[in-house]
Image (cartoon, rainbow, N blue to C red):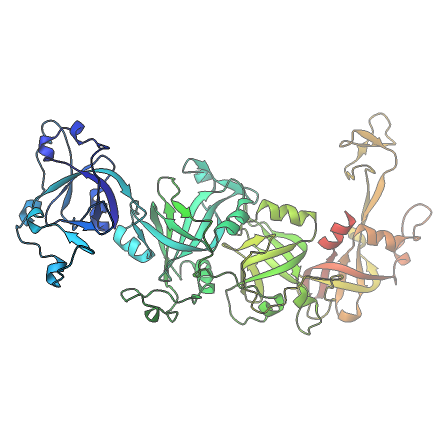
Length: 597
């Protein structure tokens, strides 16, 4: 329903000029009710003149001094002018102007005492046309609670005069696929993130009937805003208006979206059933998950999302269910959404497939993995794909050291945890989340890695110890670096060719620091049948070569053979069976890097 605040005109619009139809503040007002279909047809605005044909009805409500005009199905907007447009244009409506008595509900049900309940004017006054000038429209009453009904009634062009009330289930960012072709959206530049990618703020909403929709809103000025929107908006009710349908998508075309929808199903409270009474016993949770979803966007670059941030969290909101990593690794399903709270120990840029695309491996652990459990790794890799939008705060925090990170709605399947579209990484755990009995206690004491053994796989981290049995002389070399800034590209000093010069410091380097690269072959008891090759860090090289230098400053291979190394933290580059070889690289965990800084 749309409610219009109007003033009744005393004469036909054919006798009026546009100046005569101006709102008079001293005249009494009325409320006129229009159905959704009638309002959409009229497209009324303030100062419009509306011609209402019978059988309209005028009601005087008890304890209300503003009359109500209803039954306004035959209504028409009147165009006023001095000459050609002065005639009424009924457009065929005169064919249905049948004079008949209107029998009130009071007469039908033989209600004699109407003084305290409702007064209805006599039918003699209801068969004539009336004209109103609209003062303003009241849209607060034109609120629907069904996304599907709104879409079906308003069509693909969208809706403006009505609103639909929904609950915000998730807030996230999506990368803009159009890239450089659509840098401007609604007169606002899209936000460049992730090395040049652009992103848009999105909402996953659900109505009272369990229907979902993804609402794509404005671009973000900063990806740091996503954490604010998650904290302020998730779980709150909001009204959508001015929306249009961008796409109707199904499971087969949007697996990522529906994996998130499935994680929010079944509803935590019973939902309404279309076409049935909404008594509590007619509501249910025993309905199948949606098979399609509407992607909505705003019209004309305007934002029409009204969120009541002061409102309590809706009982229709389904917060993320937080699990321990050990529990997630035991999930048997595929493409399951999961949320967890974990310590990031190490990060590594894995691949760069195309321009603006990257995949980052984050190696994480929690208290459920650090306990000694046979068959469960102590550290797992989380793959962050290019489609997962990372906030600047997350990137900067991980660059500074090991951090606790909340992974919301990551994807688990085929033995991997992947952050994809609609996955959000936060530095703070949401206020509302379901722990599901998981052990979410923080880590205490040093972090342990699994030692290298026959189960170690590529793209993992492990601890390593062994005996040096060989040196890869083809890759061993050393180079001088600046003792002030660490610059490894020193040049000969133009004034004195025997000295080195640093372009970054613009000074002569008198005491350069010698850096080395060294790969060694180890015999490891835990993997005795494999050739284990390790690229060592500078500190381990220095320790290994200590007191092994010759008089001329060179090193003999024999001086390092048989020496013990370890326990080293390593990243596993590759594991092959023909030949049986494991290639590793010594690394510094973020936790250790934070302590050293």
